[in-house]
Length: 80
Image (tube, rainbow, N blue to C red; front, side, top):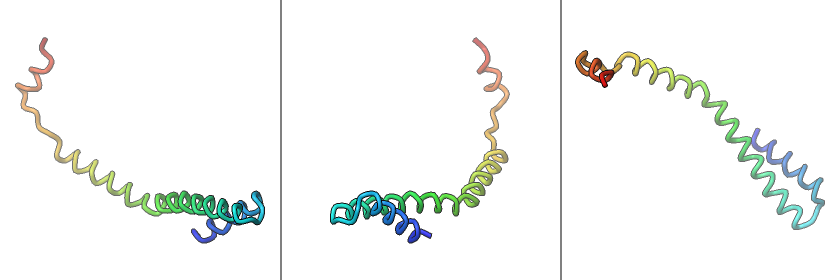
């Protein structure tokens, strides 16, 4: 998948800039950036179920272990 992104980015930039040494260097840079962004997007999609699971676990743990505030402290907060 990432190789395809690199080749597509390289090909598009060569079509835009022409075949010269500077054009090849620019095409390499742009294709690398396209591959980097595509890789980050693919990695995010791949890790999304695990990230959602981690959020759910933390939410459940915080719901179970909610801090217990004594009644004298709870009432003291609202007095002015």
